[in-house]
Length: 471
Image (tube, rainbow, N blue to C red; front, side):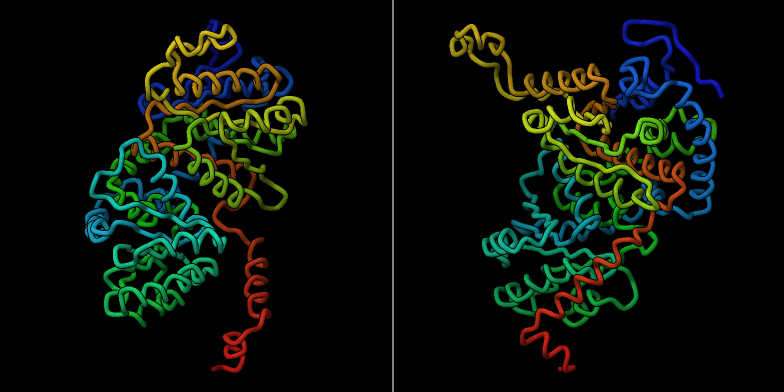
């Protein structure tokens, strides 16, 4: 295949295909834009891909997209089908409404059970309405942080949602079992069902058994939807709705992007996720790029980058394949990492992620910056500084020959969240197809889980001894 060329212009190098410069921008202009021109050799030199190197990968992705479309048509990828669904949201709304009467909601889970919901909650442009509770989405088991949080909560005014796809995740089960005694002490067993909801797969599970013991409501996690791909399921949608955000809009944004990918006439170079996959895999194969840095220029986008980190790493890191995702915060990491990125090993690709310039607060009073060394700050806001830092970092990296992808959200809201999350899920699945790995399993981590359980059992103590004796 031959990729179309465009006429030269200051913003469009002559060797650069038009689709590479503005994939999805024309059709989805109000959600996000991706620009990979600074990943190509005619822009950044030897650190980038040539068009001749990119074209075969785009050609291979024609088959990848055909397989993706066939799998969706056959119902083999239900996590993608969720983008089209709305029928389940009404039932979820009833559950969400129950939780909106609380002042706080504690959501227990780890990995895909919590990262997606947290990204949606923290990315939202709209403020949670006055009636919405504060969500505490726990993603770790640090005992000091965990105890400090739950010791402050009034469980008479707190709802709890426990999410474990397998129903036996060690971290999540220990979180819940650490909270449960406090709940029972403060509200009593009879009231537990009004405060607690469990989400797990059907069939016998340890978490489901606890629900039966205490009469707790249990919602079914679809066994065919993997945890790191579950953000559009009830795992991500229920916290979104409790926060007063529009879950239907999240799915609509995701559906808009999915529909483009499923269009049989759409070519890989016309689809932002396919183009992103081709560039990532190409840089790894041709330029030895072994790490993918996502640099988020908004605290509201930080949890999205952390969600992406699990998605990319756990889906692709198999059989010697994959690149290491690294999360960075702009402009903070300009002051801690940029020296390495610019002058260290040329083994990284950068995704600079940003939203619209935040128009918050008045510009600095010129009377306060009369020092000539500070005059450039007069009339500027923190939003101006964030925007200038993002642009300067991207341009400096590109000038140094480092491959840089720009993703700019036109707004940060539910639809844009859904579209970008769908982008990264599709990009990951397509990259896996190019690499020849299964993006939906994680066999290498099972040994670690086995060892965690064994080490806990070997620590001894009254309860462990009782368990060994069958008591």
